[in-house]
Amino acid sequence: MTRWQPLPAALPGEARHLVEHLRVLKGRTGLSLAELARRTAYSKSSWQRYLSGDRLPPRSAAQVLCRLGGGDQTRLLALWELAEQAWPQGAAEPPAEAVPEPSTGQRRWRTAALAASALAALLAAGLLWALPRRAGDRQAARPGGALSRAGRSTRSSRTRCP
Image 1: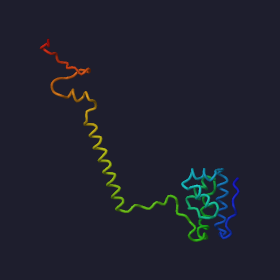
Image 2: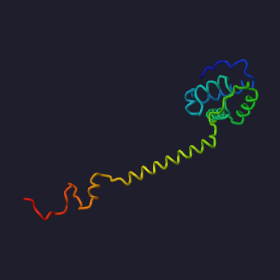
Image 3: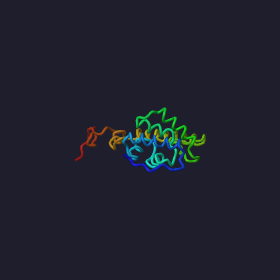
């Protein structure tokens, strides 16, 4: 079992209660911080900050730990709501999934780039299809007769050379 450092003295009671509950859930999983990071969208250092009381974990991080530890989601979310209200301002981290939406101009450029890539791929495929596959295909396509596999004419010659 992990030996935790004492929680910061300045941490409000509601926040302390949440972190202690998260520590119990983490203990139930039997996972190290590195294993917990591999199974979730949060890094090892993020879990360290959440479980040491340095940062309020995102709601989704608390939920995933609750699922892994077999805890009661309703109780955990109630604890998280109380802790969020009491947590010191500026100490919360944004959720790991938070990715800003691209602007309209960025979407247009992305669409144009994808269309250009698709067009280039179609042109390359068309060129590869149109080109002969073997050198022998070029000679066979010439007028004047078909060639055997050895490259000799299959037509017989009427005049013989002395």
